[in-house]
Image (cartoon, rainbow, N blue to C red; front, side):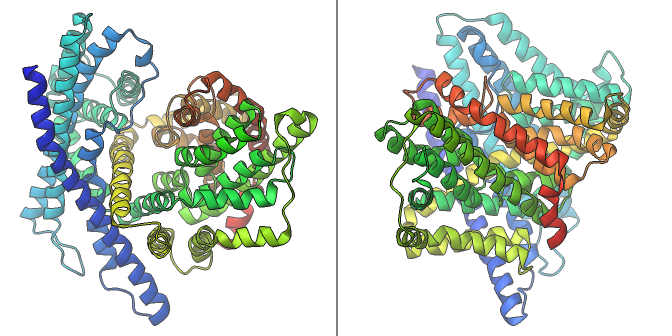
Amino acid sequence: MTDSLGINRLERLVTPVCKLFAALGGLSLLIMAVVTTIDVLGRNLFSLPLKGALEIVSVGLVLTLFCGMPYAELHNKHIKVDILTARFSQAVQDALAVGIGWLHVLVVGILAWQCWEQGIFLLCRNSNTGIMAIPLAPFLFTAALSLGVFCIVAVLNLFKAVIVFRTAPARNWPVTVLTLFLGTALIALAMDPGLSPVFMEDSATGAASLILLFTAIFLGLPIASAMALSCLVAMSHLMSAEAALSLLGMTSKTVASNYGWSVAPLFIFMGVLVSACQFSRDIFDTAYKWLGHLKGGLASATIGACSVFAAVVGDSLSGVAAMGSIALPEMKKYKYDTKLSTGCVAVGGTLGILIPPSVGFIVYGLMTEQSIGKLFIAGLVPGILASAMLIAVITLRCHLNPALGPAGERATWGERLRFTLKSWHVLSLLVIVLGGIWLGLFTPNEAGAIGMFAALIIGLALRRLNFRSLVDSALESIRLISSIFFIFIYATAFTQYIAVTLLPSLLATSVAGLPIGKYGILVVIMLIYLVLGCVMNALPVIILTLPILYPTVLALGFDPIWFGVVVVILAELGQITPPIGMSVFALRNVVPDVPLFTIFAGTLPFWGVFIVLLALITVFPQIALFLPNALF
């Protein structure tokens, strides 16, 4: 009881601090959007760009990315994989939580320390931005303090895990002791590589680091901490502890202050604002007026609405949650087959990472240094094609078996026009964001800010946003941004380390020489994405695999923009693939009374759509490349 009271007191002290940092990150994000919007308007309307706009966004990005990390840890929202640990006994799970929690604390503490060291380095060198002369050290110190609070919250969660372990009826001491020892030993090896009993060559070290990475991930260590740990231990063995620590610190600085990375946070905030404004109901009603007269019209309308919603939100799981809560009650009311209704929602939601603007394409473009604008345009035709094929499959199935879902009344053209105009807010966002990119009025980075600012203005004008909902949206955005970029920052460090080992080039050379042809190798790569997509969300899959597989794809001669579309489709397909399809699990939270088996069974008939789509763009790559080649 005394321990619990102490934990509660600590939590009450830490919670407002976490919210304060998250609020600072949200304020920084709003400032980034406003500054970018003023710059774009001034440049296009008056030929007067805002002085220092890029610098303000770059330094603000540091706060945006780091300040939400303790808030995400407080709510246990940092991305981890529990597919393996969930199958262990409760005693083993409790024991692992203690050992893995201890390792997580050590890793985050080291990251905070190295971020502080980078701040000291910048302070000693009196480093400022070029035009505005903004001092850089305070932003790194703030990031380091945020990571320090993150570490304290991780300690708090560790204490909670210890209490659960101590009070459990069955305690597995061997697993606890083993994980605590191994975690401490790994950090000790990183700090003093001379303790290692063996020495491995560069490529062998790279392979060993991958084994360590995936072992840590599947034992429940947050993905970002696993990447930082693997980089730290392996780089220390390969070069020195100082080099490994410096790599983590420098990556924290360079990634977080790189203007190019600002596109993702701004689009994420835009998507959260659209969800908060509850535009999804209007989108669904409009889609039903256009598609409701088809056999299984409600299911087809769900796909159509998901497509439009995806084009604004850019994320799969939010689409599943939003459309599931609207479409499923309607389909239940008209006695739709449960497999069809849940299957189409789960599948439709996955379109969020294919139809632009897509967070999946943003992450791919940032990691491979490909044009995000080209990727957006490349995903447009495949996304529309996927939606049309899904609707065709639903119509055909319901035509062959009318019991699956009836047709609704055919709406008049006047009704269709009226409901389309009612959805002007969503359509205008699409026109503003994609139209601005196509016309060259602003870059994809600036498009995120313009879209976010436009969504904010529309939401306030329609009175669908107030101060409370805006604050909640900012906090939710910062939580999402921080959990994604916690992975992204240290995936970048891991990528730089793995390049030193020459493992990617060695793998590319070896795989490219296999006697199964380039398309046989492509099939193997597709299977890898499909398997990983079953057990984790799409973005971590993309982040984890690209450093290893992307050089292989280039060595085989495939177009990198085309491969980006393939990767996103595969990650999308993995979201509905048993046994662990993330979109299916997200939908289960919306309809807890429907068995997982039923939802998975509902998604299987749509599998063929994605397989056919992959085959089509493989045989006819111009499906994905025609528009970007014509417009860029």
